[in-house]
Image 1: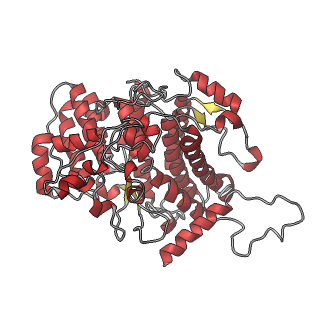
Image 2 (image 1 turned 135 degrees about the vertical axis):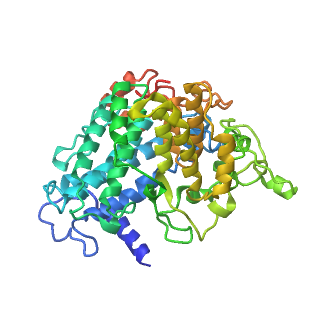
Image 3 (image 1 turned 180 degrees about the vertical axis):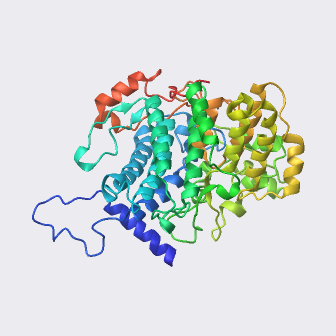
Length: 500
């Protein structure tokens, strides 16, 4: 009951963000007896975390299909390499800028002037780290976006903000992240339970900040190697994650609980079965490697279970609008995990396994004082850590047996990178935006486009298109940004760091 009340307060807070009196002399009439005149920073942070962090696990019908973990059917135009910017992209764009603008209220209004005060300093830093996390997802997804002229104080709002270059956004985010981490102070007042991830723990947020910095550093590997190496080495100097105990995860509610905070995969499970089939490349990889996570990810096909010979089979991606299939011949998510209305598990969005795979990559490069000989150890630790997380909880003996066959790195540095990234791709299941970004960054695993040509001539999209509303709301800046893209505002244009 207490949790439900807390989430209702968050929802109420969301409705009041940014509201100002619009008439003069009617102040008393505008005072609500049930809603606070000023929303506490705690409610704003909780609301954004609840929505923005769980968003990382949604969009399986678009991003999850592009990275070939899910095989959304003809109900989803983007999964068929067809644009639908006036529905999917417009809603996604608006939601993300909503998260940013809400967090900006903390620094622009709610805690303004308390930047060096124990009452506001650490709260502002934690909110800023959350904001940077969202900004990075946005620029990775769309490329150049309105950044420096967005999320401004009310008196400085620019209705037609310019689209900043992605390379400039990245440099700014790195500077802002360092500044935010430097302000974290364990003696300050923090968010406590209103911080749904780390309960206001300063040490945990500093580790998370360095994980985010590490992610950004590697994103730059093929676009600006010098800056990438500098950033990676600074992040690895720590403090940083040391085990799964440091993982960043959002608590979620069972489906029989209050309507906010479902696990993204569980929440989407009861939608159309056409949007919940597992993709053939993903299932085939798990089968080929005899991965013990498979039964915790996918269900044997309905028809094979009825025949008494259960088997797993993934559905092809981007098959087109007119292909008729029997969905009972293909696997969807494990019923006992994703369709149990009374249980759930936290949604993981930054993990110790990420660190291990990054360290393996850094070792191949000889960065941060590491050597190629160390790469295999980090690689194995990444697999082990990923298998130990919920909902897998793979026993130690099964992990050891798996590593005996899949834990050896072999071949050239490039071949070893392919092995590392294939395991990382598996570990990023349910983390669709990150899996998609890492595939674009490295080119691994090697994915074959589906047969439907769509608007990409049969190529997997390299970015999302801009919101349909931007063409009318901000036409000049939209046009300028579109003209900078190598193939215009299309799925085929690459973001700045996508060089492979």
